[in-house]
Image 1 (tube, rainbow, N blue to C red):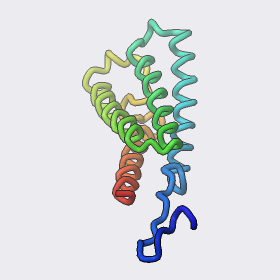
Image 2 (cartoon, one colour):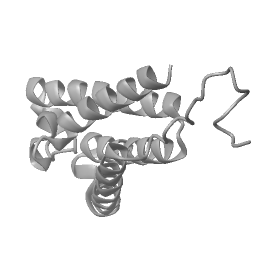
Image 3 (cartoon, rainbow, N blue to C red):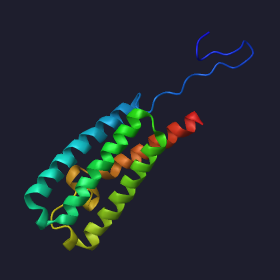
Length: 143
């Protein structure tokens, strides 16, 4: 008897699809690309000119870490951790985006999330929205 079948009178159920399958693979790919690009940029900036914009460079490093956590959580199928990471990412890009307009002196150099990710084609703003929609849809489908 296979794992997805039960007794003759029980309904046959399918194992839930992995989070990183299908469209999830594209989301993971974008998170990995952003984790690497933001992380490398942040490390370079922290090492070479941290004193010029410590807030911006620290926020970029935090963003890279959040992107990495989100990617790994999705790959491992840890939906709760993925939701937390992507939710923190959304809150961060909204807060930093607004602050970078309201208090520009805090951001003499842009961070990944400054001006809602304008330096990265607004992907930092759109990515968590897509990620949250995908994760909530997957959560609903498996519930």
